[in-house]
Amino acid sequence: MNGHESIFIEEQISEENFADIVNARQQMVYNTALGIVQNEEDAEDITQEVFLKVYEGLNDFRREAKISTWIYRITITTALDFEKQKKRHKRGGLLKRVFAGKEVDETPDFYHPGIALDKKEDAAVLFLAIKKLPEKQKTAFLLHKVEGLTNNEIAEILSISLQAAESLQVRAKNNLRNYLKEYYEKHFI
Amino acid sequence: MSNNINTKINQAMLSIDGMEKASPKPFLLTRVNAALNNRGAETIWTKIAFYLKKPTVAAVAILLVFTVNIIAINNRNKLVERESLTKSISPQKYDFAINVSVMYDIENQEP
Image (cartoon, rainbow over the protein chains, first blue to last red):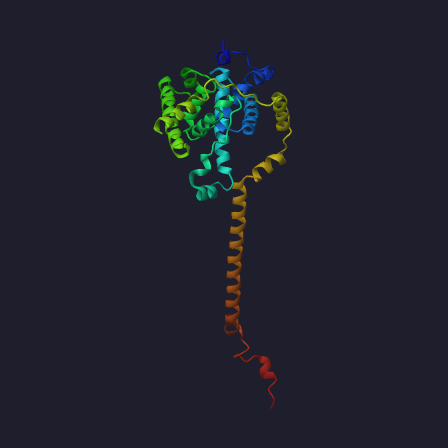
């Protein structure tokens, strides 16, 4: 049984085993958040916030979904909200964009700690491209690539059909290829 | 050149395959529990302060102060105008002593 299969095991939920839930799911929550916000400190904050929401929602959780699906949904919503809020609060963002054109977002600045050293530069450029994807495509792509989930599992988490999940993957890959092409045409010597 | 770019794109697309999972800092559970305890200790004042700190609330408050000031200044101007109007009218309209002779004037007439 690999990591993501074990995620989908049914389990009893109560306040008593909240500690077990945190210990078992922290890596899953942290990695999903890290992929979306691309900042380790922000991902830490989001992970903490997600488990606070999990604790507060334990009584309302009625097993309509698997616990992992439920936690993934909370993580994705929290991370995407966090990212939107951060963009809104970015001081001087408008000025920077006006004076520096598109260059502000054109520098790869996120190096995922789980990437092998020889692939770090390529991965940083890919993460820069991932940042530009629409929310759903980004989420579907990251859940597949980072979390290793199948399209069925992604469809369940995003509450969409299997075909829609597959379509999101294809569109995400096409868009990523286009962004990467644009990037390398500008920066590749 | 085009082949090189395609190679770079393929390399980038495959760069996160087989990546290792990152882990959060240790003692996450302790931090979560501490945050839960802090949430429980929130008083009504911390909640009020939280809402007052919001930019929308601050902007509305400033707007309200400005509006109240403008209304007050307008009302004051109207009051001053009314007072000056009253002052200019009253001597002509209510000053009976100008044209009417009263008993006092008759009694004190000298022969």
